Image (cartoon, rainbow, N blue to C red; front, side):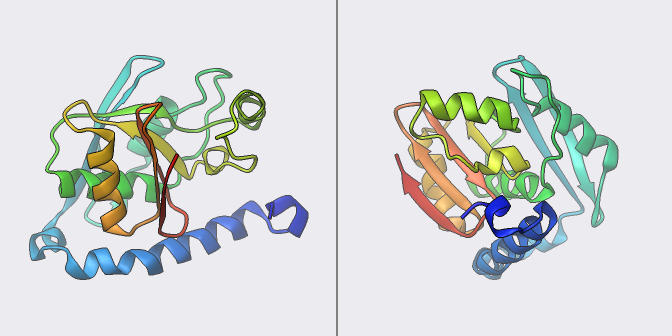
Length: 188
């Protein structure tokens, strides 16, 4: 059901989704190695395939999300069709960070889609039945990625086993969708 039809605000949607993602993600953190709790900074590498921009930044240090890094990532993950910049939910970066750790990956995430404006989403929805009408991309709560040293199946399997957020395998398009919604997985 759409947030507009129910009268739920974007903030309420984010809070509810975040709480659900946190609760469902607890299983991953219960089984995480003890060394995970000693991490003092979180860093990720992103390469936007459409703009050919690349960032390798620490976005979290000693429990604090770094505003400048978050702004830089927001810009990199903008809707490249319209230029619109969205606020990417910080849980997306955490999901990427923990996935990176679980994969023991040293290569950048190749970004197929980050933030998506409502107008872009409508166009994509018209041309592709796999695009959700109320996509989490339009809220800054989802990202589509791949990594050159892993198959999309490998990435998806690890993301699914972590149990933090949504993980969708889009094999024909060669990307994995990740979002900070409830823990669930699917293959299209």
